[in-house]
Image 1 (cartoon, one colour):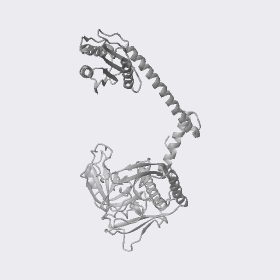
Image 2 (image 1 turned 90 degrees about the vertical axis):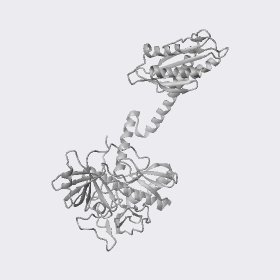
Image 3 (image 1 turned 60 degrees about the horizontal axis):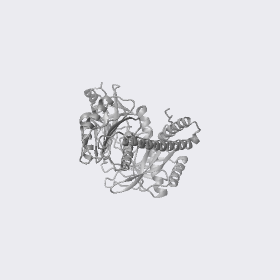
Image 4 (image 1 turned 180 degrees about the vertical axis):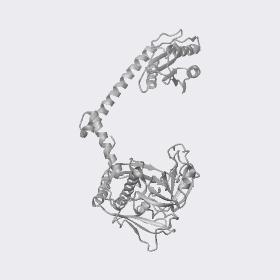
Length: 517
């Protein structure tokens, strides 16, 4: 069952939230010039959901996908196939769609042109000092019509939409929580934040710090942070003209990007707690924010520095986490037929019983392997005493090859103990599942006293049965795909063994004796 998500937020941003502290700094009023990042409507009022503005420019993107910001790293996951629908780059005079930056992902939203057409904004990015909206055309939308509807000077409406509004609220709560967490870590434990990231919803986000925290320290940081939440400490933004010679400012943020050319320095202030340069969207109060730190850390090791990730949840993510966790706990308690407080005890009991059952199965398999090995040793032999056998089994276990290997180990021990020493031998053991289809996998293991003959048998299995495998020394193993039949595959193995000449002390060769069960 999906968890309900509800977060109380004020309907109107306080008038003291956005403060321009430079007397000469003004918000550009020319509708054909873009407002720089730092003074955008989404940054002045993070709760604004719709805005009327003007198109400054619109062009077809040279790339079919939104350009990378170059920070994905070497371990970037495989991306989806490149879309074929045209992509437009739209610059607006003002916007409520936040462009990716400061560790905060981009918003998504819609542009409504004068003719009533809706255009999907799949992402927004900062180019220098201005946001660029990437609009993906739908299959029924035409590029020429789009360029006309979104041409320079067109009056349009920007809206986040329902999903975009949820995304904005999540990112805003997470970003402010990161500032709060980083401030408490630095102020109380003298631990600076090296980096941070917003994970995909509803996963926990993290701050990267220089060392691990004890359980007691995590509890202390969480308590101190939530004291400020319960007090409802105010948050506001101060904006001033930006000195291009200074890109690093004091505070818990990681600084201002070197490629920023907007001419505005924006500082997010948690009253009496923290001041950090930041371009992201933030709640106007810590009230109702709530912060939960996951009681574990993840160690990272790089060539230049070792660090630790501390994961946290807040706002909609915390509510979703609580709802999901409660649902999982309730479902587990029903399965275990116990109340929620007894779930850990019952689960531990199941784990212990599983370990005992696994140990019992392993003991029985070892006993069965020894019994089968004894029957192989006692099998009729050709003149000269050589043991040449094929034995096929039906086995639905998770590791049938492991059981065949156990048989060969027990067999080797038994033939070594025979009076007069171990005779020459060549065994082919195979195993198939009880229900077979064209996609079924059977395993084959070759074991012998003559490494050369083992290799020859493996090579023949590859050629005649298309078995995929290999080996070294006295063992060779492989997999056969398809339905294994004794009258077909079994007969082929028998033919392979009969075709191999197994010498006995340089004396007479022997033919194969083949067994099936």
